[in-house]
Length: 280
Image (cartoon, rainbow, N blue to C red; front, side, top):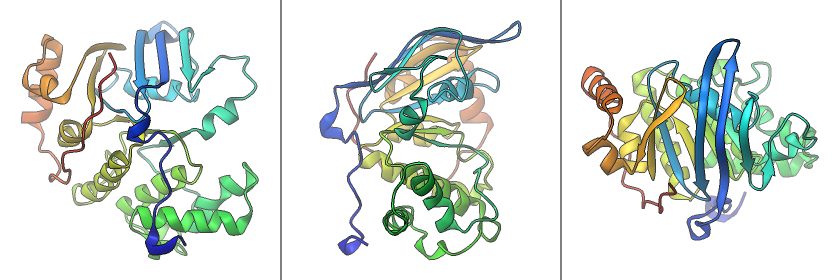
């Protein structure tokens, strides 16, 4: 282990901000006759933190799944760290190494220990030596504050612990970008704060993050930009202060009225993170 549990530097730290690492230009996607995404455009700078919110079925999850080509868009372009994603590209595995993704339902291998879950991809997909992979895995288990769970199986963990393992597993590939698809939606309320705390730590360290979530306290205090999607489109985006205090679109105002006043938020666990310069 590094001395005093020192954490490795995060790719895309705050000092690097200014470079555009994600460029999405007018992408559209259909499932049959249903338009899941329509002319969606977004630029994200290195180290920027984006929160995407919106009603169920608005295209949020489809959008971020297109960013690592788990879903294929049919029109428009997506460029990740200089590589354009398309159906003929041969290096999609290399692109995905720079993109960690955390899903709402963990997706851990139940027959593997926590440590084995974290080391499998680096060893078998990336050719990392097992001893090095184990050291890296323990470093990230310390980062998410559960190193004592290394030898347990997923079935022995709480939901919050499983999600922190999933975050650590993604970090073991040392990505430049982290995508979160409603990472707290499957958790009991008392487990939400421990996962949000882990995500706040990543934000402080300068990780480029795009997070689909309904945790509005997290969005207000951590995001550089908050984006509202509805019916497969980006309806509004702004800084958290402007987004929450002065939303411009009626659909945004209606959504915020429902989610902020109609549903209790998780206990506040976030502290203000220094904002980046938002990229329009």
